Length: 290
Image (cartoon, rainbow, N blue to C red; front, top):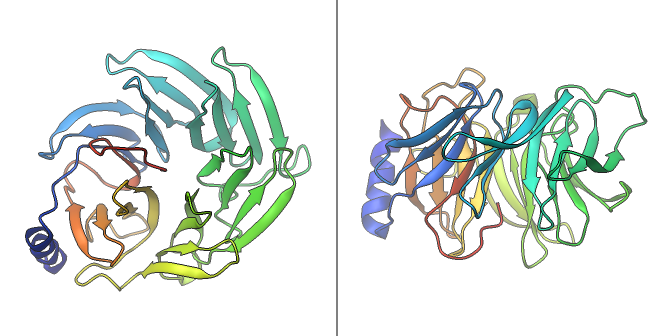
């Protein structure tokens, strides 16, 4: 339990507070809301849960293995999309539409609230299957571009609004999540493919790595597979340490670090969670980039 004692010492010295958060558990196939005391406040079945959001109305939007759902806290489904393709990415857009990243279908979709496909971008020739590892999380950017984590290819690509590739960033280990920061940098979390150690890193528009945490850099914590994350308004980063691929209960599920790489909070309830794939912090002020 060395990692747990280290985390407690960090919490004491930096006076961090536990968070209320929503989390997707891929292995259990559930999404949860967990309060600051660590108790489950809400849960819902979501096969292969990988991506989730807490919307301004309090509803949760999350993927469901072959689609996505928006569900109220009263368990009413108010939006649903189903696909023959594996789906690991979803996002509610400012215009009310929902962005969907189809993995095996190799498509980027925008779906109206009524369930109509209003935009359909094929990243591979029509009819070509991308396979299980083609895509994990993906995001539509404010400028209309798309940021896509091509997990099996080991790269993050930025596409324009028509699917033309603008940029490729190498991400060994398999990128799971990526966001564009306000200063134009890109924050990327990587897994464990090809025996490559997990890491999370920030790269400038010029391609220079300006911040990084590697697998064994945090004292007493070995990072196994870094998945979804939040960049908080105070500059801290909260990320999921996915404990699949034979690493069950071998470390904390969720870790918060400062810019100086100080651990200020961890969540490690292995009775409640098995594998945390995405986290959404619910008790901060300001806008998170997620």
